[in-house]
Amino acid sequence: MLYLQILYSFTSDDITTTIIPITLFAVVAGPLCNFQRFSHIVFWIWLHLLHFNVANQIIDPQEDGKNKSSRPIPAGLISLEDATVLRWALIPICLIVSACYSPQVFGLSFVLTLFILFYNELKAHEHWISKNFITAVGYACFEIGSTLIAGQNMSRLEPTAISAIFLSLAVFTSTLHAQDFKDVEGDRLIGRQTLPIAFPNLARTSMMLALPLWSICLSRVWGVNTLCTLAFTGYATMVGLRFMTCKTSQAARMSCKLYSLWFSVAHLLPAYWRYFHEAQTF
Image 1 (cartoon, rainbow, N blue to C red):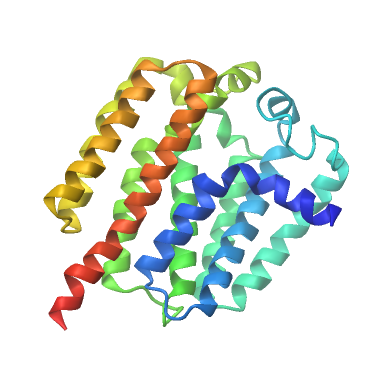
Image 2: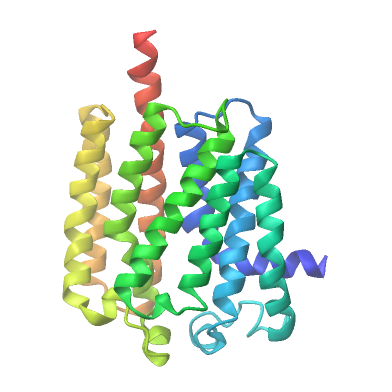
């Protein structure tokens, strides 16, 4: 039971920011061919997220001690040496599990392995340009892999799924720094240059503008009705204003949670298209 607690604690902070939105996305974009695949989707996402987080958390224990002292290494649940062994053991585990689905899923797992290496051991995380680029590409690999597992044919994506992935990648690339505001103190401590640290005013302004603009754009693309569009855009505007005006660490954590909810809803919009528009063509 302790081992399960340790593994869970490595990924618990990313349930709302990564596991839930990507799972929802895969289910609607795939679309999910049968309910049994749901557990496969969640496990594949969680396993690769575990790989990334263990690799990340053994690099900067000092950062975790400042930002997230409840994580397993600073909390004393696992030693740095044992976490390092786990980090490298997860590479073949992820690749073998992925190979059981299809060559395409295996390929995405291999790409994720490379980008995790670049992000952590090669220190791409230290500057916001390389950090954001690798994070965006990695997130796209998560979405493509999980969507392939969800679909009837795990070797190719449907046209609607491809469009959804491109849009999701664009949204994530332009808003992913939402998660960096809550970690500003710890990132400054280790000299990491995230966008909120390098250009704080630009980072906050971009959130205020991007969230409502993307809400309108996504609603138009997926054929969302006027009432739902207004509600979605109104919520996005509120979250964007919070990033602009609420600047304490505690406020940043709440803004990140509200952003995660917005991002999850954005991931569900392809389902609206499938139910109200695509289904009517058959």
